[in-house]
Each structure stands twice: as C-alpha cells, then as structure tokens.
Length: 319
Image (cartoon, rainbow, N blue to C red; front, side, top):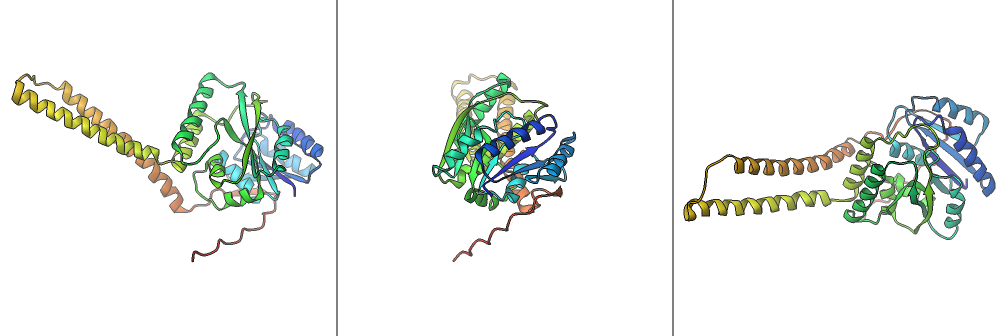
C-alpha cells in the first residue's frame, strides 16, 4: 500500500461525497495504491450512512465507527492504528485543506523527508478572534516548549511509516499529535497554501475544544506553567516581605500609619489569587497523570471494515 489517507468525521454529511470525489481523483492522478480510512467519531447526522455507502461501492474505502465521540486527536489515532500505507496522510473532512495539495506533499516525501506538513499562508472564512487566538497560541507554544513545533500548521500532513510506528508507541491519553510528530523528529519540511473556508456544515471545533487542545499541548510538552507558578510564589513572597518592612517602619519609626481594612483585603485577595492559580496549574498536570495511570483504552470501536495492521514488535528490554 503506497498511501493511507485518514479522515476523522464528526457531523460532516455535507462534505463527505465531495471529499471522496476529490481524494479519489487525486489518487488516480498520482497512480498510487491507496486506502481511504474514514473514522466516524460519534456523528449524530447521516455521516455513518454515507460512509457505509462509500464502502459498499469502493473496496478502497474503510470506515471505523467509534462507540462515542472521543475527540479529533483520538479519532486520528484510531486511523493511525490500522493504516497499512508506507505513507500516511491526515486530512480533515471540511475541505478547508485542499486534497490536491497531497500531490506536492507526496513529491516532497520522495526527496527524502519523513514528515511533510501544510503551513497556512492565510485563513479564509474564520473570525478575527479565532485567527488572533490561534496565532498567539502557536507562538506561545513555540516559545515555552522544549521542542520545535511549527507555527501556523494543523494536522494536515504526510508522515512516513517509521513516524506512524513511533506514534503507536506513545499511548498517552491527552493527545497532541502535531507536538508528538515534532518530538519524534526525522527530516521534516512544509508546503505553504492558502486555507479555504469551510465547504459545508458547521465546525465541531468549539472554543471549549480548542482550549482543551491548547492545554493538552502545553502540559504535554512544557513545564513552563509550573515554573511560572514557582516564580510567582517567590515574587509574591518578596513583595509581602517588603510590605512587612514598610508596615514596621511606619508603625515604630515614623508613627505615620492609619488602621484600615483596604490594604489588608488587597493583600489577602492578591495572595489568594496567586495560590489558586498555582494550585490550578498543578491540578491540570495531576489530572493528566491520573488519566494515564488508569490505562483505559484510548477508544472503543463499534463497527469497522478495516483489517488491523500487523502488531508492532515488543521494544527491547533495557540492559
């Protein structure tokens, strides 16, 4: 199998047929053997029915119907677990990322790269607030993480077989695939494009889900928030010490003081706020540790027509 294309699906009935048609045309032009793996992530519309229809008339179409909605990153992971191709493409179903770009990305793979990701020059059909928050998040993440995560990119990319095998060895619950692929390394490059607006339907990526993804990315690849909490504690302690010295000076030296509750309330609220923020940051890390310790499966499959890929060999024991 030359290429496996993984497409996570969540309420995409308006785009499935068009996406299938464009992907099939691209693969036919490239003259490669391929499979299309659609992962239905708990859709509530007619997406699953359409996928079953595609699979019935085209043997190269595979589907995985998850037992419920597990989230975009887990849906992609389910596809990666069964992909048979020497190269695996990841693309969303909303047609904002053009399937035709796969030709150029695949050509880059033949130049010796193991990862080729699509980098956005522009983003059409998105609000100014979303563009601003996305821009700030990617640049903040690039600064505070200890690996180089490319900015202005999503999950639209082609990865070599060895990268897929590396991802299968990373079973953490809170997935951030673009960060994991950067962590794996190998030779990586990009292709620039202008991102179109959504072809049909409504996005399933709400602000709540984007915030959750941002937290997963930050906590998985950076300990900067914990360091910030520690530094804040020292800074507040220093300020409090100076306030104590000033209070003692006013009380016993200048005798210029006036009893009141305002300064006391400000100090208590300030200290309390820093403490709560610090506890919250620590709690985010502990929650993620707890999720991984339980070792629950990442997802459950209700139905599929995709034969599982060969299992990976066990890693060698440490000497």
